[in-house]
Length: 85
Image 1 (cartoon, rainbow, N blue to C red):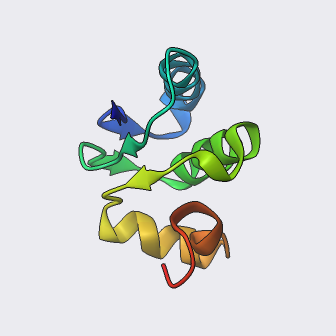
Image 2: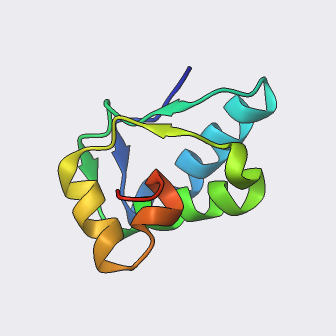
């Protein structure tokens, strides 16, 4: 399982995206979001980009409740976390 960084905000979104891309190139597997404690809408953009690049095979696990709420606000919660998210 790959671990998300603890922070994905506008300032560090490009580095976070590249770090997650590199991890996924190293081998498939779910991305654990439990360590994500600081985030804003840039985190949603990073996760949508990963989903677009990786397709439906990307599993995002343990999203913080507020990240789910933010994703729902943008209408991408089902895309990121599955039906009924």
